[in-house]
Length: 148
Figure 1 (cartoon, rainbow, N blue to C red):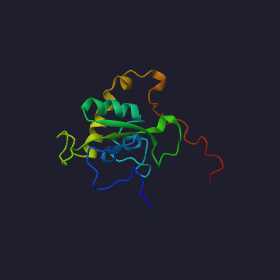
Figure 2 (figure 1 turned 60 degrees about the vertical axis):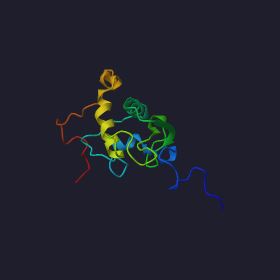
Figure 3 (figure 1 turned 45 degrees about the vertical axis):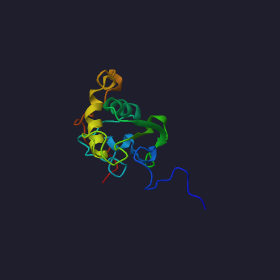
Figure 4 (figure 1 turned 90 degrees about the vertical axis):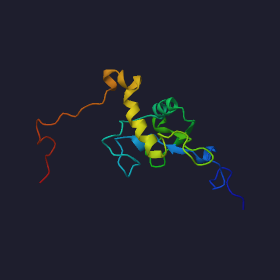
């Protein structure tokens, strides 16, 4: 039996795309729970990031990236909005970090969540696309008929 062509093995170099880290938008989405794939604390995450925003932010760092049309396995929606996986090369072939400020996956994700709100596309959103705030208060008994 032959092994798959793209399977991981320890003899691959860090420069091989298969060894690059993967970042899905769900990892940094504050609308997701830990069970749905969020990897960072909710208070620092971004609301509904896209793979294009992640790509733009990581590309600006000078790291080598790759964009793949993949869907996160825990994602329930199959819409194009939720598709996309970013691969990032973090290490040289000798195992040393390419950039000292990005030694691991978590440092890259923290940089991404700090940088996405600064993007022009995030700052100049039309009013109809701004996140809606839920107003609380008013008639609390509304919709509770029949509950005892």
